[in-house]
Image 1 (cartoon, helix red, strand yellow):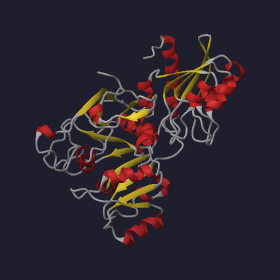
Image 2 (cartoon, one colour; image 1 turned 90 degrees about the vertical axis):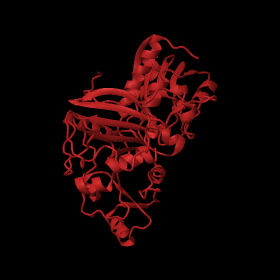
Image 3 (spheres, rainbow, N blue to C red; image 1 turned 180 degrees about the vertical axis):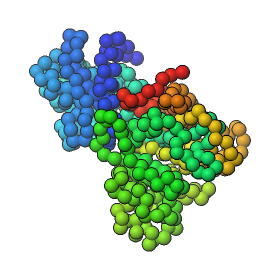
Image 4 (cartoon, one colour; image 1 turned 45 degrees about the vertical axis):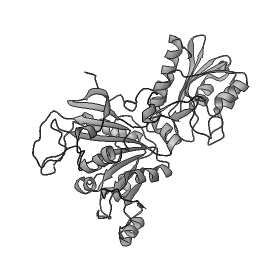
Length: 413
């Protein structure tokens, strides 16, 4: 195992800090930051601003100019080695005269990988693995899609201290605090799609748009996704109005009436037929596979009780959970809880999760949770990134929260 110095670790931390500025701006590309160091000091830096724009390495090299010769480059992802919308970063590094390249993890994209080999062949030393855990966590959306062609799934919900997500009359605005809701919009800015069920769409008539605050920018609104087996939702919902957010995709069953499908398509909504589970619900696995084929790398499920139970218990498709617990009691046998459905018959069958983080969002408790069986990756024997199966679960640190914004006021207990 390669051991890195305190200074080398510091410079890679700076590259990761820069990379995080790409949250909500770079998809379907990864978030990447780069730092050029000479005689122990940073001489230039850069980060990827978005698709079609210079990669982090190119931005840093451009800022350094001739000073890059003899410098060390720190970057959280292996430099690319292909011609896409921009030129190969490996080629630019070779031309610059950089002496050594430190990178955290290999590029999982089969079209872009190979940069380290090209650099080594040109006589430039490379060193992999510096802060690999942090680098994996940062780009877990990108990595999962590259390895599985399925999106990374985040489940988000808010509940009272007694686990209720609404009152017995259906009132749910607002259980969580404004600070928690701001964090939810921060999540929305960084994902490719937001998914809800039919009941939530009908009851709340949400826009499902990301509404960031302050100076946070976005390069696109996330896709809006709704599950409606028989297409019973009215066509005048905000979900189906282009002016409110990103494009809308609706999943329905094969029994959905053709006239309703035609009405949605005429309005500009993408309609995809999928099968049902043994419980009669739309198959989330099929829906996520279909979204993966559309190059959706991440999905935020803002789930009611039925969707949450299906995603977490029945189909086990969730990779990360954010739960906000408000300091209030609601009560009521008829009031819905976080999870609906039939549930598990015995305690031995309960869903096991890892609580990664316990903090605060304003007055609310914020739990960040990783379910057992969620996506993980690690470095394979050949130095490439590979998916880790649960029984082989010996890999990198568990992912925590997405990159936090300046307005994120979480504090640890």
